[in-house]
Image (cartoon, rainbow, N blue to C red):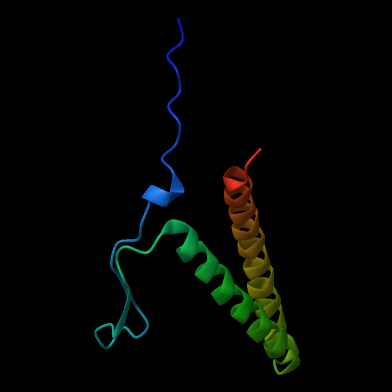
Length: 100
């Protein structure tokens, strides 16, 4: 007899833990992600940050020499893939929450 597979924990029950934002290796962090942010809210903010990174990468291509342009395009593609993953995850969360 197969054991039933438990449902995954609800995203409403998952929250962030306080985590330092490491920006400068020579100095202690000034900022942190605060504890207690709902997973869905954190995902929405991550997507917004990636949208800003995408805009920056697009602009950087215009101001980068030929030698460095491939690095910027690589960054752009990585950002696009991360955005697609977050979009798909958030759409899945929303679909589970809709009645019917």
